[in-house]
Length: 228
Image (cartoon, rainbow, N blue to C red; front, side, top):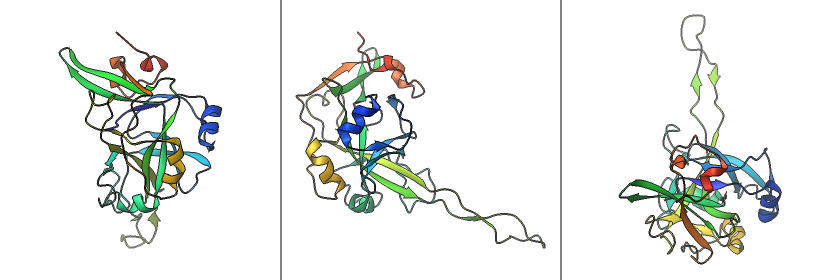
């Protein structure tokens, strides 16, 4: 699975790499976690980098608690939570590394997986817009319900597709994010079929990092540095 990742490249470099402009003041993220608003590029606006919440809420969900941080690529086209988004709401999730946890004799140890030069890449994602139900508010002159309504703002969320691991990730976890080759990023956003194959292992490396990454409230450069 993909449950935590990083994105700390400079904004100009990211805008040049993905040919898109940030709509917000971007700050480096060393420990991006579910529930946070994070940078993505959607098929609806491929020239902009926007912030959506990680954890897709299906359009038909009763409430916003039904969230999916990952979607299995093998079944994404058929699962009710993702099928509609797969057809018409795709996105690129920007990252430059991700974390996995391994059980050892000394406890669970976090590892970071990244390209050798920490250059950014795009994970295949889906996005959705969920509108909270409208509720009547207030009382009329006779103590009954008024016709006034309270309309909450829609929530835009995303999920990351996963596939089988490559040789670098396999010792760490049985799943990994679908990392798109640069030439396939536009194809994915255009709604065309792409192969959900594991990313080629050659450019990737993995290394142990501080257990401070276990706490999503920790978000600082030291988290991406190797430890003994």
